[in-house]
Length: 490
Image (cartoon, rainbow, N blue to C red; front, side, top):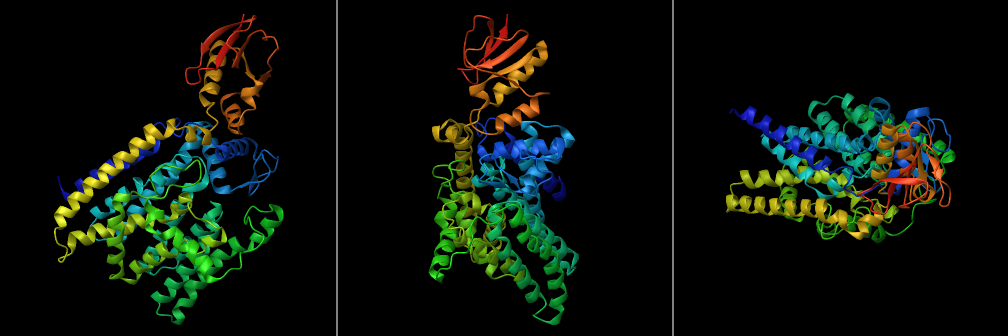
């Protein structure tokens, strides 16, 4: 087998493995939908049907949740609405939106690595580092906006890299578009995009040796970014609090911001600290696998002795969380998803440095031991995530809406037997907006609501928690929820 064929085979193998990791038991792990997923999925399907959200607003920029205190960002909702329109609405289609974004990020990381490292096999390693990161597996499989910074950050970095190498301003224009859209993809990006924008301008100036030649590309980049910033006052007036939670930026001394910055880039935070957000919490696992920490450290050194572009990547990695003090953000690993593509690239340079260095003793033994440790650490995480994590009480509470199998069974049986579907009120109104999404996705018209004490309607099928009614027979007990039953009218 030639080198090219072997590389292509390995790329395909990693891609298939990535898809498997992202989609294995996708509808069962996590074991339900949390509040944000319910709101996003429900509004996505409404917009795909009639261009209006649950508040009857026509193509709103932001969507107000049912509790009227939280605004949902537009990128994921409209991406889901488009996918629903093309392929039809379902829970699978909704979950696949984030899978596609994350898969796209892995491919972008591969391309960046190919541009930065002449030996093509290292690009495959960068892909692997991204895919096996715990926070990537977790956020990819949750239907909220947390994974989107990995995609838009990777897209921006790729376009900036191509600009640096080809010196064509079109790539700066496209990179600014990526940042502008990314600004409205995840609320945490509000304090990241300004940093990335400033670093882009700094790279342009450094590349052109601070000469007048810097002005044109900086103006192109700035003018492309300008509309995304200039629209903020209008959006804030129409959607109060949708862009910024706080009425003012904390005015504190440098130690305040230094504390939050360092709290988010220290090794413990990145590799060992569990996310305190209930839907992301995984005991003993940080955002990245602890077994890869030595490679990140070596990679940081390796990049310092290379080109300006490589040192730019270092600057992005270290400075991305520098404004986290504005949000008082610590211990939220999912807000560091934007660092994972950078970590994957830097750790890959760590591998390469060990391989090519003439001064690194016992390199073969070191690589073998690290490979074994990373393999064991990865398998340990996969075992925890796919088999232990879903059974934990804390996980089941976080993903409280686990009614999908019930709605699916009701839909199948009602269609198969041509019966009018009813649902017990306690089940229908329980938990979050996910039930409304299931109703829209799997039933042609609104469900009929049945209350305890009411008679069983004729020619109907009822999803209930009552195992017997005088005017009904039990069709089946829903195995995924032992206290739920489908009843048929006699």
